Length: 321
Figure 1 (cartoon, rainbow, N blue to C red):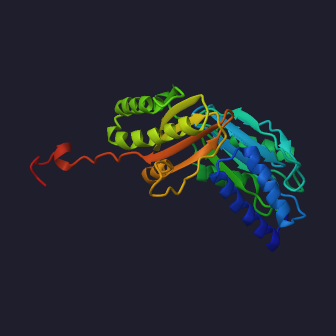
Figure 2: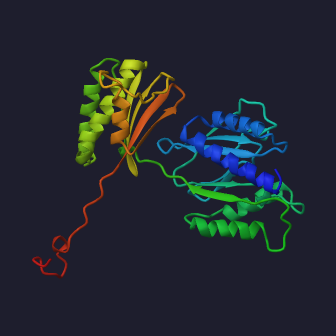
């Protein structure tokens, strides 16, 4: 969209808008529609390309929306390389929402390669040739350090002294998947007894994961989430626990109503559930799904207890401090 000061300011505003919309956890096509509207509001005459991807580590699905942007490359664990076949819409400002979403399954430990067309196209090189050269450089990348690989791609595709009429950016991401034994999911009945059943399920699962010290807090969180769904939303209701870098607790239902924190008066009997959730969880939010919504909370995992010198007992006096 150009290289002037005005264009740079516009890109900064778009980056801020993307971060804000991503925090709202809207579907990728809706995020792109909002960005398209933002470009219109800024009164920019130039078009801007954009690609937004959302990866789900529980099933390997990647949802991608492209507004005139080149397709990402996928480097599979076996070293093979292919470009995602996208449904590409026109660039921002030239597009007419709704945008189309492409769903692909990306194997765990694959490498996702995002780039601007300035990396693969120039006045001396057509885009097809540039993408072929990118494929050759990526083939067999394996477990190469991402910083080193990025430098290797830039060096190989943008040789010193070459023409650089357009900006060139490359972004690398290695995707990981949660193992099956780190995910637990259960259906819940649509009645007041669901909260008690959910507490029992959480208690037993955290015991199996040896996370008993999180039991009390997680039981309180799941009680509030399930109680909120049973009271205000519609089924079917499902509870899911994810053990990754954090402990994620999700309660899903078929309603599209967004939960909101209420400022309950001292005489109100209810309305404090989400205040409790906000106080107990490190973070929480609502994500829209294909069948409704999912309310989630995140808690930090306990830090492992460091072994002391006496406990290790390697060549030392067990009585020393």
